[in-house]
Amino acid sequence: MIEVRNLSKSFGEVKAVRDISFDMRDGEITGLLGPNGAGKTTTLRMLYSLLPPDAGTIRIDGLDPRENALEIKRTLGVVPDSRGLYKRLTARENIAYYGELHGLAKSQIAERIDTLAATLNMEDFIDRPTDGFSQGQQVKVAIARAMVHGPQTIMLDEPSNGLDVMTTRALRRFIQDLKAAGHTVVLSTHIMQEVAALCDRIIIIADGRIAADGTQEELLAQSGENHIEDAFVKLIGSDEGLLA
Image (cartoon, rainbow, N blue to C red; front, side, top):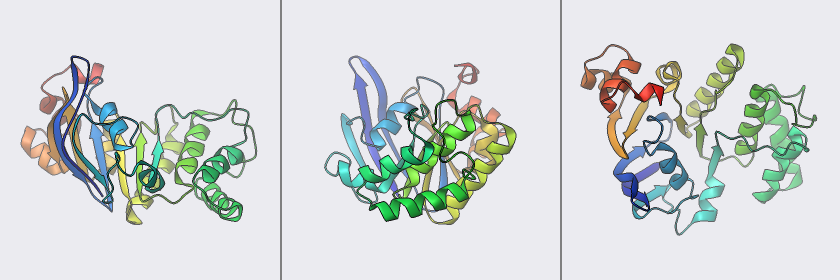
């Protein structure tokens, strides 16, 4: 469960996030959408304690990132848009390294890696160096690395960028399984088909503010449109959002 109240962040004279509030609930997939430069990435970075807010409060499973940064890192699994794999290490070694950072015993790490490799269909490349991996293989390693410590809340930033159709379908099934297991899942994406297929709730940020927050049905009704992409464009008030 993520609770955000009156959150703001500026960089000099640029107000990136302006007094936003929202909730992201357990057992739901929440889409965080917005055109480039809207404040979406800044919001995500504040949620996983990479950036401190100027004002407002964040609670993740009751914890404040400013006061409980280490504890929050243990309850969070983050898949950034830049996968950040160590190319000289194998997939297994990349995942194990993060397990060690989270203080897991070697036996726990080995068990978790075996489970994740089977779940994500990684057995064929789990012991290969990640240098030269396809986009799909990189995403799977990044997800396994984020999940190795069993986090309650999972944040996925553009997870399907560059993936083929079959890998995208497998990724969607995995995300739906996380929801079914009661996790809080945050999905940041520009792919509207992904939003329509996965998201229970959608938060749209434009110009640092909340432009809309609700279920797909609520956003369609609010915008008067029949498709979520058209609703997105109308609610941010610009046809340029999809081109940014």
